[in-house]
Length: 475
Ligand code: NAP
Image (cartoon, rainbow, N blue to C red):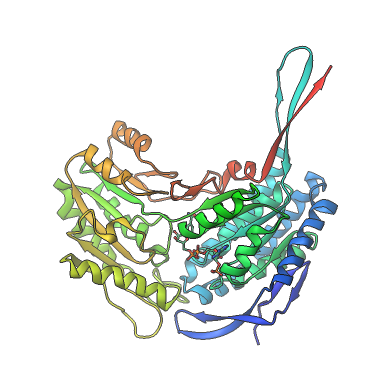
């Protein structure tokens, strides 16, 4: 028995399925519930129901009514915030304090887009005295939102909220490892008064249900966050009937430290820029470039701060670093570490399993890493960072931009000209100067190159859930 929903959420109702996906608490390695896995018939019902709600109700609702409903949903998220946070913590081993912040972010995202509905409009365009020209921002129809397991609740919200606000209906496909808060979100949306079919939640195997969802003829847009490999597959499938896609994918973000920065601040905040969420963060600053004169001091401070991080039971308030999501996700990190060691790279701290039970791994700092090492080039998606010295700004920049990814990054310097020069030159969708903050719900978030296409958050995301129509009237 559970006190949270574990079934599919289709047309306003929970629905059991023949097959299920066991959910394991990564901190105890124990299964604690099973979640229904959608069949192709369930998928058909969910997409058709979402389409029906779109054409019969949601797209033509007054902006005022849609605003009220999304505000009501934000209120319900807040009212249930503690149980949602506890659920996320148990489902993926995320520290409870982070889970609480992320649920709050989800509520604020719904509020932001609820407030945006009445302020989002087209333009009138001067085309000469013979006619009158204006644009409309029109909803697309059914949006498939496919989300990963590392930030399940906020990412579900930052796709569903702008899509719904713009007048679309949504079929949300959570990751198989983290479906629980998504199902609750669907149920809360219905409780808030959204029509049945506005937000369907469809747990199921990505390779089957996700793949079929992407190809469904009634789906007009796919908004995906996950790995670059699956993002590329979705783009290929979507190309067949020119579905709209936005993709938030992997990253290998740089953290660039110049000698003139506030070194204490940079070094004490840098560990959490890569180890937060146990490194399972597409924005993780896992490549640190340090100007040579301050390299030794930076490493000393970085390692000292890393050793102070509290790794442990995600359910405890004081915990900063929880578990990896699964045993296999931990093995991926361990393989990177072992390979680096076999090539003679140094472990300055970490590298071991600190607790016997649970998928824990110490935050790990690697030194003497070379630019063709796999750990320097590839996304680890675990608590592993490499720190290298640099001497020359332009060579360092070449190395930064040599990555196929371009999602996020930080530049630490007190030289304004240099900060602005590099902010322009680094190939990345999101950058922070003298900070590690990547996500602001009011600002666009997404990547260059193989880190993605399109943007989540801000008004840019809302535009991405509409078609732009131009109307000319002869006068
Ligand atoms: P993933 O394997 O790509 O899975 C992401 C989602 O796609 C899951 O819901 C998955 O379902 C589904 N999926 C899998 N195969 C599919 C297919 N053929 N068609 C449609 N959907 C399919 O990625 P992940 O392992 O969950 O997440 C880790 C990756 O996500 C990392 O590379 C990370 O950098 C990236 N990420 C990027 C961002 C960003 O904003 N840029 C944010 C978070 C994560 P199942 O779980 O059922 O397989």
